[in-house]
Length: 130
Image (tube, rainbow, N blue to C red):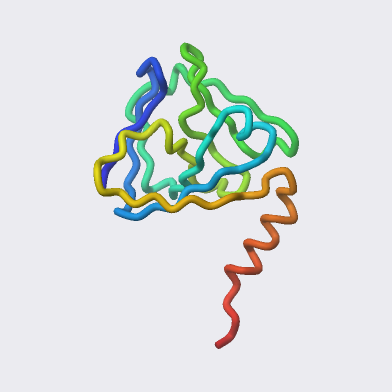
């Protein structure tokens, strides 16, 4: 289903395609903890910026891989290009207009120990050969 989202002032607006059941992550890194960002990872093909590219500003830190985007008018970070999925987007669940009936499954991500946790996730996603 198609869901709308955006920043607080409405200058930045986008839509994402989601399923009736979504998995979101709470990250404990310094950035996500301070912002209260709740990650919904979507492939680039499921994301469409509707307006506001001219209002977006970028912030990079640490490895410089993630493109943290925020609205220059209201300061809200409604989505960004994450280090974990550079070919997609992490959308802030709090910035979406979720319709009734969407089931949200919440998980934790250890962003304070990003490299170790990302390695563990990669190993879990590898085929076991069975």
